[in-house]
Image (cartoon, rainbow, N blue to C red; front, top):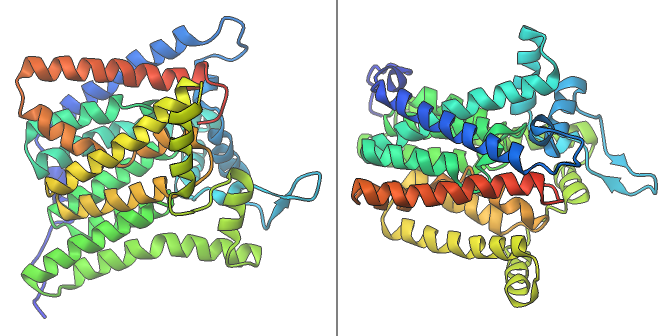
Length: 384
């Protein structure tokens, strides 16, 4: 066994160039200002709720309820005795942070949720930029950040949802792993795994990074511990839910009952795309169908470009989880937000073009992406 060399677990973050902070923060702030302005403009005149209500809609209520009341002790049922969804479907990372901010600041749970999201999204923008810079160069990092902050449904980075905090943990984990700061990577991988189910994909990505390191440097305890800790996160929460409810399949039962989320290896996705492109008269369904096709093509490009294996593995597993699951298809654009792999080919291509071309392409992309998210929370009548 090769001995571990001394490492500074947090050195990956202390040595980041200051521009990796200032540039992504400016991109993030500008994208939020523009998008929230669009949301305010698009809210129907007869609507009772304002921008804040849109940012706290749908799943945000579940997260704040868990933060305030804790988890239920078992299954819940509707008035007809049918199994229904409950708070156990939502992983604890985000609700714990909401409760923590509430306890420290005494802000309301709703305001605490938005506070966590906005701070986490700012951190995510910084870390996504730093990751792009570490894997490629500074120009790719900037392009990656713009694509991340302005993609369709990037509005979720302002809402009471867990995507922002998950991406912050994920990008931080990948950055730490790329710089071989293993204990930091393991801690962030565990945090990601306790924030969203796709944390399992992040943990596998970390394990791939560890295996690559072991091939080069042999077995060392820090990488092994990091991977083991991250890999334990999702199974630990599912086990805890199972023991709390009294059924090892409880989390999956609750997901299916409440949100129709059943993994069917893409059968439902295939039917949705086929039917939407063949006979749908709704442009949202058609746009989502095209997005589902486009992301598959982009994934193929990423494979051909030989993206860094841990990021590639995470992205492909996360994409399979999104495409392979049934349920509400208008949630798919939101579920693509943490799949950073989908942004890499575009970021690399834009970084290799001239500045004028990159600005024109990014302006068009941002205009559509920021408007699209605003539309889905103001005009669209279904949950995202």
